[in-house]
Image 1 (tube, one colour):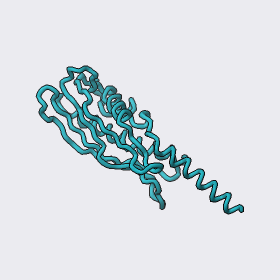
Image 2 (cartoon, rainbow, N blue to C red):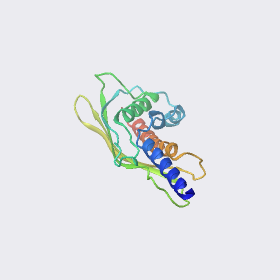
Image 3 (cartoon, helix red, strand yellow):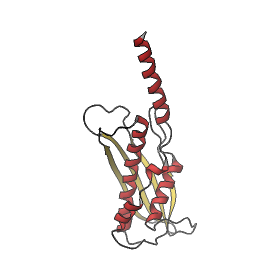
Image 4 (cartoon, rainbow, N blue to C red):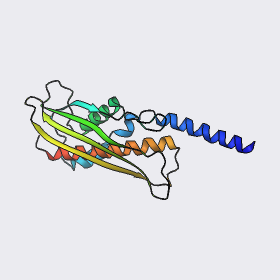
Length: 184
């Protein structure tokens, strides 16, 4: 009887945890911070380049009750907000540049055993082009890994959000640094 209660409790907790994991990762976990933006700018003033967001594709959950989801709208907002922090984003329809971003692979492994840190890996394909001419200016696939020490005492859902959000945030941070190198 005691074993049955223990198994029932474990199943209940796993299903509740899995159901929450299938929900989308909140945009706050995906967006770079003001401190990240300041580091990316390296003491320079904000840019005034006008980059509008074109196609932005997140990552739908692949396996119900197991996969985390990066929704298109949250991913778009995270990129837009991050670019705004360094002065690169424009919501103007006549923006000179347009950016496409597609998550092509990645995720947070549901089960991570052993003593290695928890980790998440995401790969995003970015394309920046001149909105008037269509000329490609920048095209790069950026892959980032985010690690979290096993000592982090978190519920599995929060750990998934932190891992997925951290990997995407690092990815966007890398994009921002790359875009700031361009003469726009």
